[in-house]
Length: 336
Image (cartoon, rainbow, N blue to C red; front, side):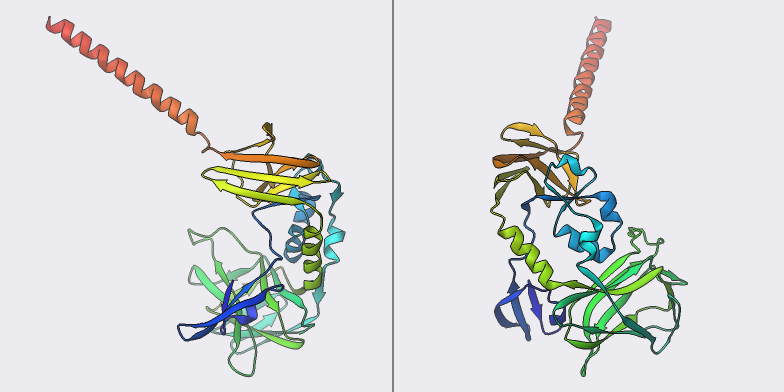
């Protein structure tokens, strides 16, 4: 991950600097981390989709670091189940004060923005060792003229504000809109003490949310989860080959092999040569249930409908050829 002097405040926790140099006149730094989720990994904990959807956005982030989220927990056959109470203990709501700035007025969870570049401030105290997020639920912009607008979150400092994140909000009039209205704005790990976040609105409108809050995620907890996973004694290696993913796994307990490749009905799996179910996991990815021990897992992808489509096309070509041939035969017979 590469950062420079303009976006250093966005540096996620658990990263260590490994190189720095000047690129295009800016001091640029290269960071790396061991606390990441690989393409293929083993987990012994599951969480139901219903419980996952009951969590806040920040809590979901923590849940995904601990468990495989599936509709039917029993389908994975793992030994532990993560509950909403387990997750909420690692996310803390922070007392924050919101004050209107130039060009804005606030009433409840509604902010009237009268001109371009209007601001408001969110002030709270940070520990210096946690990651902070602003959760916005059901964000709407009434009276917004452009179909896309930006809301920028910056850390107030003695010099120029340091940009931390930008939310790109689009109305349903935008043909590219996915209907996203809930946001978890990651502010990163902020300096210890009082911090003022300047929220800048690109366009005038009446902005509203059903709820908004500042929350803290414990960096030490996230690090402990990563260490726990690494110390479990599991092993998992993987390799890509065209449309095939091959994994070699080993574990002393039943586990779920989670593949962070988007799920599609075109994927099929085998475990030690025996067909196995591919389970939709973490809302977008996939997993395969494994018994304890060592296994060779293969996932193959074939475009859905490709074979039936090819057979239909071949049948159509064959039928056309037969009809054409018969027509020619009849034409020749008539000429005779």
